Image (cartoon, rainbow over all chains, first blue to last red; front, side):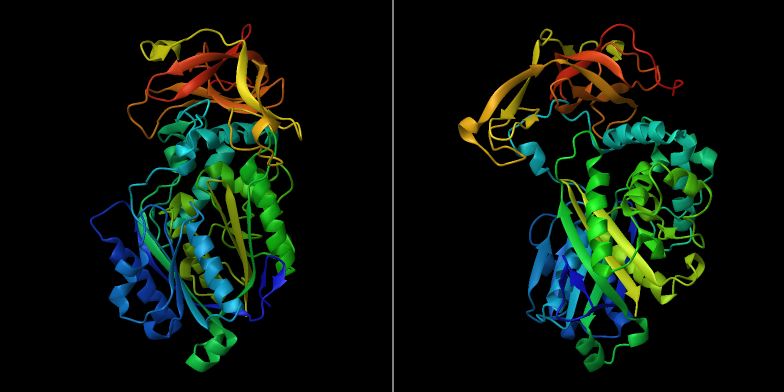
Length: 383
Length: 138
C-alpha cells in the first residue's frame, strides 16, 4: 500500500516506465529534445502510448516559466493537465511525488513525471528578500559543504581521504552508467590531487551541473491491468515523504532535515533502514553522502566513512549507495536529478541494471534535498 | 588572505555589536536582522525587536575557498562558521588569518564590520590572540 505523509493511499502506485537523456555538459541540444528523449524512452519502457497518459508534472528549476507545453506538445495533442514543479534541487523529486499523489488519490491511472533542465541558472529568491547575508556571496554551496566537511572529518577523526573514497566509489559506478555525466573511473590519488575548491573538497568531490532529462511513468494496478503493462517489471511505491527545514542550532540542517524525512518515509513504508538494498542520495558534495548515510540510519554516528572504506556501500556490498554514480558522477542537471534517482532505483529493483546491478535488490530509497531547505524521500520495493 | 584582499577591502571600523533580531515572544535570536517575522514562532511587528548582539564568539569551522563560481571574486579567501556568545550562528569571511594555515576550530574572536567589494559581505571574524590550526596545513 502506498503511504503518503502517513496516509494510506486509496490506490497502490507503481513505477512502470523509466527513461533518460544522458546528463552532460551544456550543449546546443534543445531542452525539448532533452525532455522528450526521456519521455519517449519511458513510454517505450512501459509499453504504452502518450495518448494514455492522464497527467504530467514537469520538474525544472532553471528554464523559466511554462516549460511543459513547448516540450510535451511535440508528443501530440491530448489536453491533459500539465503542471510545472520547482523545488530547487528537489524539483524532480517533488514532481514525482505529485504524480504519485495523482494516482494514489484516483485522479489518474497513468501519470508522468519528467525532469528537464539546462544552464544557466536564474536568480534565487533568497537573494531577493532585501535582507543581506553577513557573508554576502562568499559562502556559496561548495564553501558551505567545505565547512561541513571540516566538521565531519574532525568529528569522525578521519582525514580527507575519507571524503575522497566517496568520490572514488561513485565515479566507479558512474563509469558503468551510459546516462552519467562523468563516465570515467578515478583513483584515490586523482581525486585527492584534483583542483581544490573549498577546504578538503576537490573538483571531483563536487557534482557537475549540466543538462539532461529523466522521466518516470507511474500507474495504478487498474492502469497496469487495463493497458496490459508487464506487472513483473512494475516497482511499487511504498511511501512518499517531504519536509522543510526547521531550526537546528549549530547542527547541519541538511542532515537533520534528512533524518526527519527519511524516518517518516521509512516508517510509512514499514521498512527498517537495514533492510534497504539500494539508496540514492543527494551527494552533490562528497561529505553529503556520509552525512546522509548516517541520517538515514545505515551507519552509526561518525561511522559512515569507515563503513564506506570497508566496501559496505559498494555495488554488491551491504547496501549499494549511489549505484547510478550519484550526483558526483551521474551528475546534477537539477530538474531531472530526483526523477533519475527513482529511475535508477527502479532499474535496480527490476534486476535490469546490467554491469552495475546490485544482486538481490528488493527495496530502495531515493533522497534529495534542495535549497530552502526542503527534503523529499521515496521508498520503493519490488512488487 | 589580507594581502589578497588589499584594494578590495574597505574596513569601516570594528563593530562593537552585530545587528540582529530577537523575538519578545519566544526569545529566538537571529542574525541578520529582518523585519518579516520570527522564524520560530511567527511573531512580528513590535514583538520582533532589533537587537545588537555581542560581537564576541567562537569559530566552529573554517575553510579556504580556492575557486568561486564568480571568477571576479578573488581567491583564495577563508570563511568560517561562528557561534556568537549570544546564541546566533553566522557564516562570515575571516580577517587576519593566513590562507596557508590549516582549518581553525574553537578559536575565540570577534566580529568586525568589513565590506569586501563586489561580494556583499558586511562582517568578518577576527581571531583574538594567535590562532592555532586544528589540523596540519592543507
